[in-house]
Image 1 (cartoon, one colour):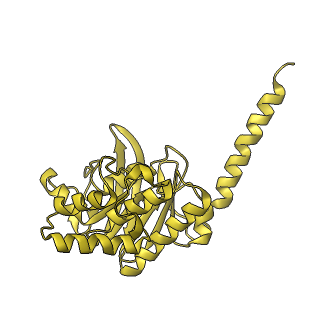
Image 2: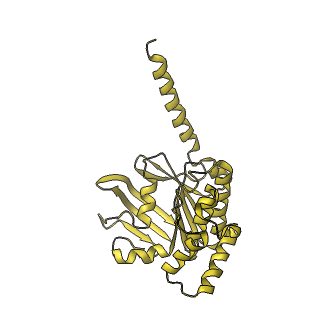
Image 3: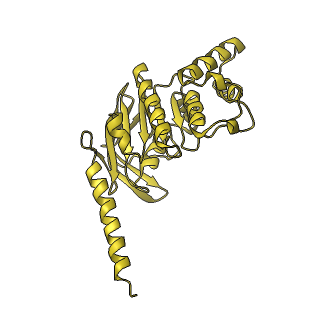
Length: 252
């Protein structure tokens, strides 16, 4: 099991964001985390790679990621955990002062790769996987948003991680490009790696099925199969009706 969260509470400073979280992730699974803004999606992901610390409040709680007990994990041990994860951000976070090749080389060298030929071979391999081998010497500003996100995915899989964590990886992309990115992430699960991603793009859930959790009312609910799409639509319609009613009630 890659993630085993049992009865976990997630806090932002002293504010309880999610309560009694139970989340289990196995190899090769494709998992969506959905929910409105501010419901704890990103906080949950940050807890997985120790950007947010977890505290054990009782003996019934368990927090393990890739076999590591997060309650006992020392700060000096966090980089080793992150090397076994691939992390993808909505804003790409590429280094803009260097080419695609040098962006990827930087990561490999920082994680212990030594041989120049071995490094170049790995860079070419991952760029081929994401269909970006012809962009190897381009600068980030010369790439479209979708191309930059593909490079970010290539960076995430350089060290063949057991799990990829993606926080709104399609948030800044058009619908067609977003679909291509999710398709690429779904394909990665074929290697045995798990993918866990947050998204507001509910249409992707039908196009690329997976396990679906929803953050709502400080809870994490398994909504696989139904994925509460109807509830989300009803919530939006209710908000629109309230807004329309408020507007029509204003005096002329």
